[in-house]
Image 1 (cartoon, rainbow over the protein chains, first blue to last red):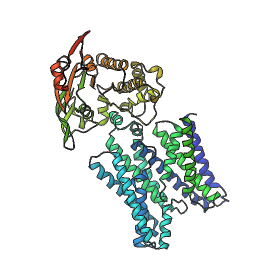
Image 2: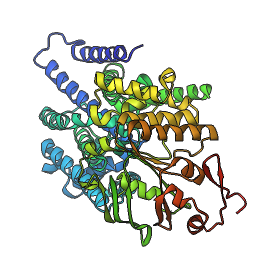
Image 3: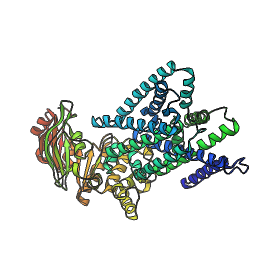
Image 4: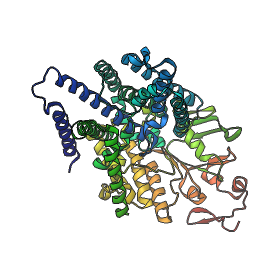
Length: 316
Length: 253
């Protein structure tokens, strides 16, 4: 099967998923249900896009197909921030209740942290991306430990609010935030798409990339910033969900078997949308909200990975 | 012309390349020889700006390599390192097409395709152009990478131990190709070699390094001398002339 045909099928499935989600049992409720569902769809498409894009780019830069950008500790920073705010200011504070303020604060802190981390590392001239990852893991673990520490001390009622933030959810999406996120991501994409041509060359390795005229250090820095922005936005919008990037990115590699990042990224984005919208549909219609999207995606993704392992073993 | 001026590189306090000044003659094969750890590969990496030097400068046609735009540099100088491990699966043709990246920026024109075809022909790879790199033997792989460099169409071609892990037949094949690149296409080839006999037979100019410094720099006939080699390798190496080739018989030294 040609890759363009495969892509067409994926886009078709994604469209069908969205259509079913939007119009099933609508019963003419065009003023109430439709806009609410549409906002959720936009949020899911946005999340699917940012996570898939960020993961593929991150994996290409690090030459590693089992890493996700969460290794830089942005998810744990988000949780720490939420925990600390609720612990010190209480769940009734403006920072918690007002979603816009919370969103902007979270995005600002996460991007600020990422920039600080990059700045510190690139200034030292260590230029090793693995050092960055190592620092990310350590800082991330540190953030998680501090969060856990506060969560143990916190008032049980307040903990419920914290716990709510610990899992990605599309059930209470704030429509203003979705538009805001959409605008930011849109602007970044216009800027980022120029770099996609470099990704193919970057996957050949640093030396080959420099040989072929890629301004390696500056491009990698810019890409890492873009990854950080995307992850921050999606995390602040729906919660920590980076794990699912791993699944869609690898599915895309398996499905398309190419080195062309235009194809790989588009495929991963389409699969991300299918996974999120389809998963959310299952959560709402099949399980009637008795489980979360994370559980569904983890379950299906886990089964797929076991299948891959078994298949590879047979091939060997 | 590539000029290296007072170039040094330090790892911590240890100098791996120290105060190296050397000029690469255009239209010739220049070999870098010397013991392991002499700084040959590091020097080559700095010339091709895979590494930044700490002091000194490298000039390509009179302009500082750090001031040339990445993309323009890639049209003038290409480098092939000894290990070319990749975690993407490419066919030979796809790899060679990457050589056109500095020109096409990812969108191959008909002209690019023509040059890719030519490069494949030149390396006798046309018949197997759709095979994957990981299905090839070491010699075929190395030829594929050289085809890519040919497609890149640079005046200067730098190669870091291109004969590594190749048998006699393939080594000779690669060296003959490099010779043809210089004679037929007028390229300037700079090559790091471990086998001094290949350096003796195929190169026009030899730069010998030891402990980060250039110890000898001259035409091949001047360097392939017992006294000169003694200084470079600390070995007494007799030299025999066989069929117009000056061969270093170092096996019993």
